[in-house]
Image 1 (cartoon, rainbow, N blue to C red):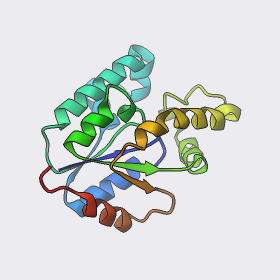
Image 2: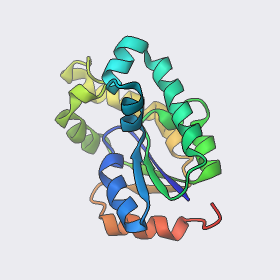
Image 3: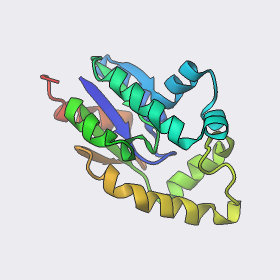
Length: 172
């Protein structure tokens, strides 16, 4: 069984993912970290030196590689589900869980590590809220096709575990 955590950057995928994996007795993978390891470059460096299109292709390759694995919780990059029909592919091979976060929560989380986020790294702080809001509006239709939507604000790890456990298909 594969469990894909999807949602905007700063929505809690990398925070909740390891906890959920532990409770499910699955392994945990963060696709951005996996790409960084394979490429031996940070996501920012990949965007700067090779471009976003190259990065999106790497995400697609990682998804193809992971499709044959079992018992994984996978935190996807924020844009991964919205490119190359990846959400459709993830829905076909596992459970997709949209961690839905509001603009305020996302802003708070992103301001902590803005330098690690290539899409917002060069955005003027006074324009950050509008940029995030626009990008989130673009991606919401994709995120909302997830099989399970959970609001991440105030979410407890045990509640996430119970909701995911109820929706796991043992045949996957």
